[in-house]
Image (tube, rainbow, N blue to C red):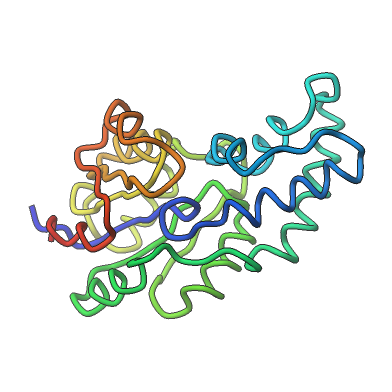
Length: 215
């Protein structure tokens, strides 16, 4: 099979955004005098969207829908203004994207981060590589729902099996399988090799340039 397109997850795959996300949520928690969390804790909160992260970060005693919504809106506002302060591409990502672009491989981003934030980070950090960047616009379309991935394949006029889906979480691997795309896990993100393999990764890479072996 010759792969002609690649869909990337964003957080934990293309960029290390852990500190910006953690700092934003901790700022919200501090304003409400709630306990904060270490970066290592947030590593396991990331992956299912910011609303889910807010729910996990709040104390169990203050985890009702109204408080989640209140904190989610505060988180969006603060993080939206500070989402690229510390966020950087992982080592080797830019070189990989340069290589893929030179081969005329189609490239897209599909994230569970809010759509506006996804587009902002991709446009600021990767202005020259991706023809599509899609984030979360409605909970029903959140990964592992493959809808957005399949829409990308249609827009590219490619079959799903001609596309690699690459990410750092079990949710990404499930999305790839649901979309009938080739699931590739990355070891530098927020989950372990074992979790990725158990979730269906057909390949786990340890360096971005290793992806080229599939091409």
